[in-house]
Amino acid sequence: MKAKFSFQRLTSCSQTKARAGIFLTPHGPVETPRFMPVGTLANVKTLTPAQLRDTEAQMILCNTYHLHLQPGEGIVAGGGGLHKFMGWNGPILTDSGGFQVFSLSEMRKISEEGVTFRSPHDGRIINLTPERSIEIQNILGADVIMAFDECPPYPATREDVEAATLRTYRWLERCIAAHQRSDQALFGIVQGGVHLDLRASAAVALAQLELPGYAIGGVSVGEPPELIAKIVEATAPLLPPEKPRYLMGVGTYREMAIAIASGVDLFDCVIPTRWARHGTAMVQGERWNLKNAQFREDFTPLDETCPCYTCQNFSRAYLSHLVRSQEILAYTLLSIHNITELIRFTQRIREAILEDQFATKFAQWLTPTPQSGETVSRNSL
Ligand SMILES: [Zn+2]
Image 1 (cartoon, rainbow, N blue to C red):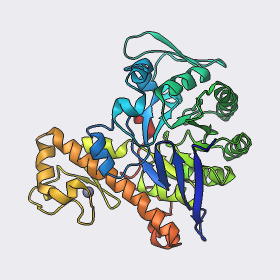
Image 2: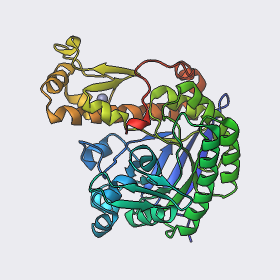
Image 3: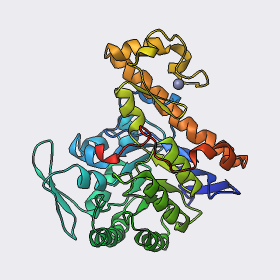
Image 4: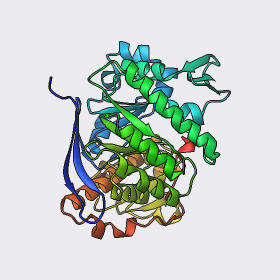
């Protein structure tokens, strides 16, 4: 049988651990490194699939936890599966719901079996186990599905983090046993909090399971950016080089560049669409509030070098007017630009890696200096 998934490394950087590659899925290729937009409820907020395609999005994310609560995986399956239901024919990744259960739900109870929590929609008690998470993801039908993991909060005691890391491994074994579909790739998730030795032993243990891909989870939960860089640096190189590596919940310029330098391939984050809904544009590494007076009579595009529909057709003054008027079109136009911007950032890095110019051309992004406005906690998802 022809392999439905493969990862090909095209080249590696001579000065860092960065690599450029292609991850093939049943719904098309993903050129890495690549930013993946988040479509929590089977839509990237305010964008049609055609608009999303124009941003050059390849793989996008949907959330198992949210889709299980509304509309429920049965309805998604009734609509022909996630791709057909949401009209997106490209690759899709679903997370396991673990992160949302641990960060969002109240009254949760964790046991070896799984997690019990109360639905924020209707108050019913829901039991999510590794087997159930995989079953839901098998029904949803994304190309890449994620193992159900225990994501410890930050800060947490070392004992708690160690217990969660070991449990995540036991849960991964149950996920592998429960997984039913050969047209879906199951990725394992490395936990370990800020403890580099726990991260390293988890990465080594997971690598032996020969999964089609690996993720680094439990970061961007409130820890400082320097720590994220250290965690990724200590973890990514221990994962199998011939498999894609995904850093969950990270999507700022600096953190992505640093993680790419450690050998990470895939990223996701809600910030481009969330900031768009706050009237904020991401322009060449900066964050602009379009309500600022300086944009009122500025008739130039957001970014003259940007090929997106927004920059090709509208001025900063027009966007500022829409934001001030709270017009829905403002959020669509800014989402188009912000997503295009982050994807282009990873595309430019990819091109630089292919030319072996990454360390030189992106030097300004390769130091983990925290700058206000650049980072965002995934906790606020
Ligand atoms: Zn643009």
